[in-house]
View 1 (cartoon, one colour):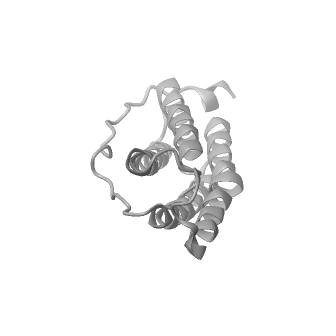
View 2 (tube, helix red, strand yellow; view 1 turned 90 degrees about the horizontal axis):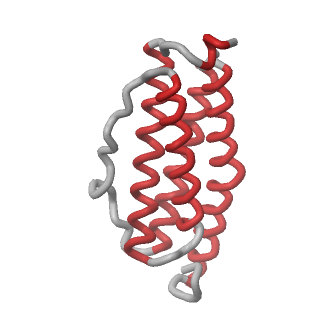
View 3 (tube, one colour; view 1 turned 135 degrees about the vertical axis):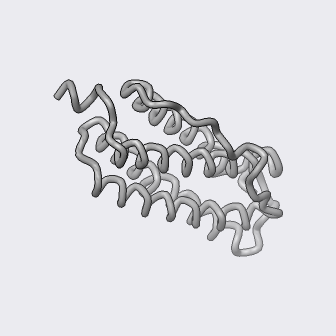
Length: 151
């Protein structure tokens, strides 16, 4: 079990962790941009905090296995949604993509620490982020955008 938690990662394990890190960093930069552009709107405020913790979790596993941590290429390079509704639609699409990514990574993983990480990330997407972005699209899609602190 010790080797499954520590030790060198194989190429597929490392590629999977880098894919997850890159995808989460992109989503985090995009959601941070929404908060910067549109204020403290939900669900972006909560998702930004959650994704920061998720990114840290991936980095901890990479560190534990002695893997290099790549620079974050996304700040300043993401799409700025002109409205909160469009941001919610973009967030829904991004979280759907993250769910598919974590499905694929879970199916290909064998290390207990990495499986646990991917399950945690997948659960956050499926159980919290996707429903929150769906609610946002429904709430703002009825013409209510711009009313109140949620949009």
